[in-house]
Length: 557
Image (cartoon, rainbow, N blue to C red; front, top):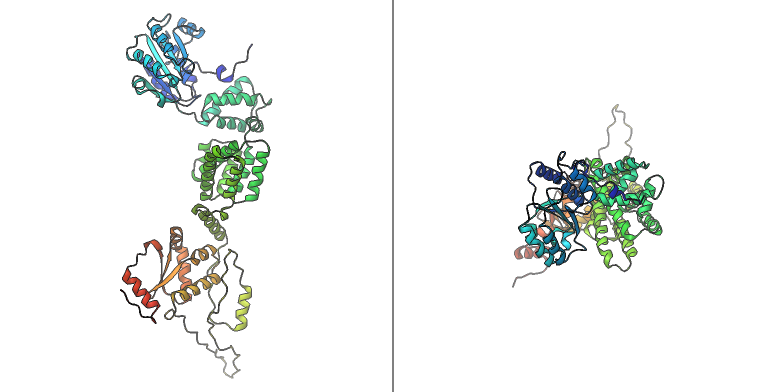
């Protein structure tokens, strides 16, 4: 006996056996039960979602003598005759019969009454392939069809069908089938044929089907022939896709900015003969799963992955920063679009991998945000309280503090400058007195630091040096380093042209640290502004020039 493909062997013959498409089935069932069958239907939707199968079931159901729940009974004489093939149900492939002559022949034959049933049904598949002349020939028949004729037009591209045809058909849109339903259908088929399988293998095949039941069954047939048992490793080998665990390691290295590991894993996958396009699709698919696991509370239900696979996805999502996931997805999606024009797809992919895994070399705002977020996470894991600057110390003590100062390792260095040292009388041991209660020698506190005679540059420079010594918040120090300072009366105004830095510095924790540090250098009032919000008038500019250059006469002309 000749081998029959799975999608033909297990093609549904009743509405109850259809995989999803409940909205379409319900409309057709109600029309059959109410005896309100239309003369023309348009079934449109992605390939492999059941358009032709539903058309065949509907053609038999409207001719059935005793329909059961809207489906053909399969026992009456009409059902048996239709199963063996009859002139009452005609299928036409418009891809190969798309000329005007075929439609004229159909228009002549449709006038003859049915042989066994009540209706003559014409199923025209891929109807969008008809020529303009063929559409015009079909249009006359659709305008005034015989009472016994029913037309079912099936297409994957309804936008190519003329509006005159669309307006005369009842349109029913088929949807992609969720992966959960595809898995359930595939498991039932594997149980029916007695094929042992792993749950991970079934999930991988269902995902590869991408919502198409026929595509899934075609893929499953290839994987079934690969080995005696359907395993996850066998499925990945048969499909030529990257192994899930390898993909997981590669994505983890990308979002963690581990470029050596990322390039190593990329080399391993490509060395096995996997194509660049397949690897890109695998990475984008995994990043989508990571994004869902990162943001959705019901991610396990939405992704419908085996527990072990979902656990791996969840671990990568928990360890990754949201901005890093989004940036990696955007770069890879852009690279996939550019592959069609790339002379060397491998170099294009490796360049994208390096951009993702090495944000320090990328100058866009997303890379900067990823770096700042990573630094904040590292610093938040080891918080350091704001220390107090010693105002009374002898020379040897100052050297000791400088020796114990931890090195600043954020990539910035400011050479130390001379700072005012407040001389305090050395501590002397009081002479013993006969009094039973010895008196302590009082030391007068040093005068407080004042900002009255300091320029904005000097005040800001003292602030930066004090911040470097008293705070371990390297991100705050980095953001403050590029601020511009100017006095407005007694208020020190700090400006920046980066909105991200402006918002971050005005956060409560950063603003409080800056306020404490400014207090140490004698600045009691300060404000952080956006540079683009500063709109100085000419009068204000002249006043500022006169103030800064008081020794020179300035006149306006």
